[in-house]
Amino acid sequence: MSTRLILFLGLIAAIVVSWIGAFMLYDAAELAERVGPLDDRQFSSLSLVAAGTGGGYENPERRGPVMAVGWNKNVVLVDAGRSSTSALRISSIPVAQPSLVLITNLLPLNTFGLADLIYTGWLEGRENGLRIIGPPGTKKMVEHLQQAYKEGATGLGRALALSKDGDSVQVTEISGDYSEELDGVTIRATGLKGGPVPALAWRFERGRRTLVISGTGWGSDQLVEFSRGVDLLVHEAVFVPPPSDVEEFGVLVPPERLEREAKLHTSIQEVGKLAKSAGARGLVLVRMRPPPFYDFQIESVISQDYDGKLFLPEDGEVIRP
Image (tube, helix red, strand yellow):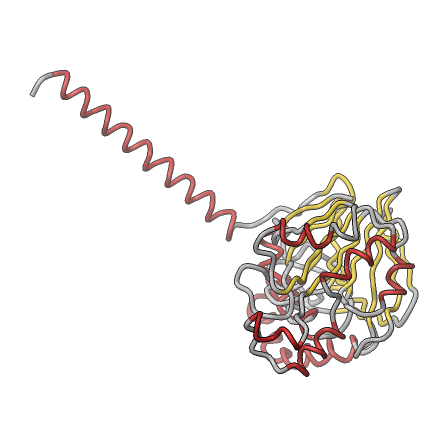
């Protein structure tokens, strides 16, 4: 075998080894990102993290509704839908970092992840309990959750010597206007009327930066007033075909159910008008059904009534007012 051939084969072997090493490092880094410990996330300005952008229906690509609002080291969650802890992981937010959860309404899609958030955060080092603020009925729901997990939580806390207060929850119920200051940010709420359960919209103000998060498809008049001139309005948008078009769209749902769905949600045809009426400079659409396959399809509908900035975030995406 010639010297030239030996050198050539050696070079090929070195390249192969280096590529294998690079792939192993990449896999290790990716694994660490998925399961490794996270440092508390810091935000230089008021930021919206669309941690979970899905709705109440199963969707492997989008977790349930979880919006995170961050500034400095503060993280406040609005709603805690299914897979809340997974939504925080993909957003690079430690499960134990949020200290306050705000609930828009008690429909199950907004609270599926509360138990996960309470007990997984405790397991991962939360020293002090969560604060939860929500509409009437929130306290009773949380008490039932704690009762359901009491035996297992007591055993786990004893076995691992976990913080005595880490799984505790302080609940505040509000039915209308509310305001508090938290590290330089004003958090406000207002009631939204007309739905099957009491509902709230939440507003965050820091300096000139403002954002409003709604989790309901009713109370549009109150929401418009509450969102006047906001930088970002976070809202749902749902396409519900009229009963006469059921066969055309291949929807296997009774017409009566479609009529009820339409009353419960904000349609994609109306959400742009709502944002325009409020004077919102940016509109963030989440909880979409069906999920957006192509952004231009949604943009073409919304742009007919709204000329502000439109966001269609994926899970974990950060948007700054």
